Length: 275
Ligand SMILES: Cc1cc2nc3c(=O)[nH]c(=O)nc-3n(C[C@H](O)[C@H](O)[C@H](O)COP(=O)(O)O)c2cc1C
Ligand code: SF4
Ligand code: SF4
Image 1 (cartoon, rainbow, N blue to C red):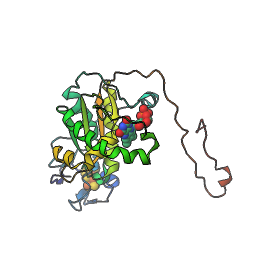
Image 2 (image 1 turned 180 degrees about the vertical axis):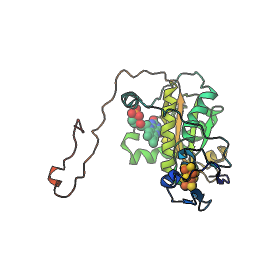
Image 3 (image 1 turned 45 degrees about the vertical axis):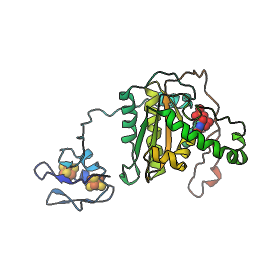
Image 4 (image 1 turned 60 degrees about the vertical axis):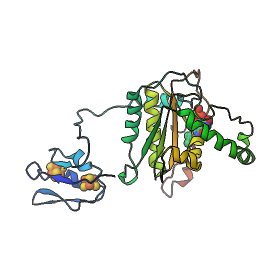
């Protein structure tokens, strides 16, 4: 969290129902004399107390946005979601068509709204849309320098050829996702990918550009990274390739832990893994 926030509970609105007490993850609220009170202001600032209160009695200062009433929760259709996840591919061929700023904003919004460890909300983003070749050139120089070592340790790097579009594949945009906590940044990136695909974009996670950005001093300087760490990079644009079928993936490695006594029934799941 970068800003100061303060939780207020309106004594006038509060009916002492205790819903906020029950839902606070750090036990930071008590009901005294039939009114909710905050124990301390240094909490997760997760906003559950705001979200759960039936009387809208709780508010938190210091945010740029106000809570929005949820009349009917958004519903995701499970099979559609699974089909979307199954048929997505890493895209490495892009059209020259630019990506609208509004679309990029919505992709970043998907990242911003993703949960983060301890609600730190410390994931940040660098959008590259102009001068991409300038950054790519520096990364290419770095890649050419480390490729011989990579070829020694990674068999699948042996046939790699580093051309002028090695990192961005002529894509019109890329978003660097930065964060202290790798998991928080990765979760944000994953939601961003889904949002990009909902807009008809193709995405390539570029671990290689992330590595170049983290280890090339010149690139760090040009990107103004300072102490920040690039966790991943989403290269994005409209796909210039159509995938006609899904690919095969390994079966999920799942096992079910049953109570003692029933252990003999424990079995690894195989296709189909739930029945
Ligand atoms: C964290 C991460 C980093 C990746 N980095 C690269 C990369 O630098 N270059 C690349 O061509 N593909 C990269 N990929 C794509 C993977 O190679 C790809 O996801 C995998 O081969 C499966 O293919 P699919 O995404 O089309 O299902 C990356 C994927 C992930 C999840
Ligand atoms: S949920 Fe709202 S009304 Fe209920 S105790 Fe908490 S602040 Fe008061
Ligand atoms: S913001 Fe979250 S952690 Fe803080 S009091 Fe409300 S529910 Fe508890």
